[in-house]
Image (cartoon, rainbow, N blue to C red):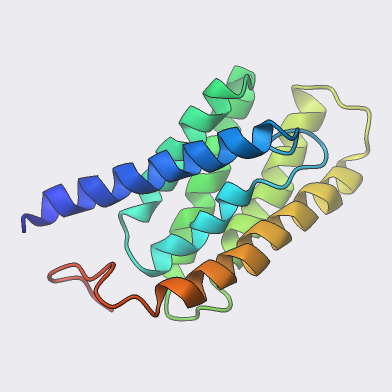
Length: 165
């Protein structure tokens, strides 16, 4: 199989899944705001399996932020937070239980800045760091590691020819 086609296909599927999960959770008011539990952030564990998850997560977050009605600053900075987290997860891919730390930290500090600065929420920045961070811990660590443990049992799901393990 052509490696470029596989990479693009994996990235597109991960991005699409991120959008669907975010859109679903937005119906419950949990995709954006001071208290959020974006279950789609569980997918930030996927760079442990494939580097294609990095652009997939970034584009999925970008599209999700657009369709859930975020302002342009949130679309940009929120998507960049997910990109930073995905790259960090990839860099920590050999340390599975540390891999969720980058998306938790990136979102816990960047998203509250966006909420305070651009949405002008009256909540204290550190309160928002705690609330957004708690949601990220639940999504990235709890759900993400459940996803990791389920996917690592599926043989050849993310085996890419020539990919380093």
